[in-house]
Image (cartoon, rainbow, N blue to C red; front, top):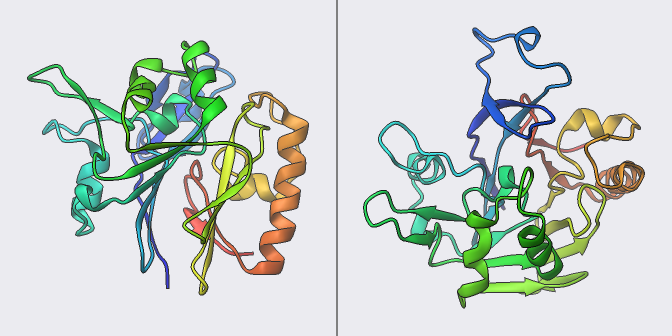
Length: 248
């Protein structure tokens, strides 16, 4: 049985500036935020199988008040040493998904990969695109190190990792977005990244303005919903403020 642990960094609002502003439902209201702001969770996942400790995307890379990476602290709180992570699967490299790929040491100012013992799996074209499009959505400084380390595997198109993790190039949200289906023989766990980020989006047909190809994303959500319902997938929702994961 696969074990799923959501590693939420919290709720945030984001608008056209692409700045992620923390949102506390107890005291903040959407009316106080800029027009057109979206409320999103930033929620990487740990999936533990018989063979691996798999991290799906890496969040914003924020540190807590003690200076510890939130992502590391969450893992430790769940009894997992961050050095135990064996695979890091990246759906894409927008900064809210890849901010925790690497970290800058506050003392030495040296940058290192956040999970040095893990193998990172990144789409080859997405890597090039992230560097080229450095700016609002991409933060090249966080991800450039991936090109310089030998524990990074650049993948292309569709394929399978270690006979049980299937990846599919989807596009939609950004040109080289990819999704993952972890099938350990007992469970099928699906991570749709920003093509399937919230349960409400799975249930409604709409074209999102913030997608590179909104029509493609809408069609993909429909396809994944049908496939996942038929095959009993557990969907992981990276941006859902209420429902981290679930089945249809």
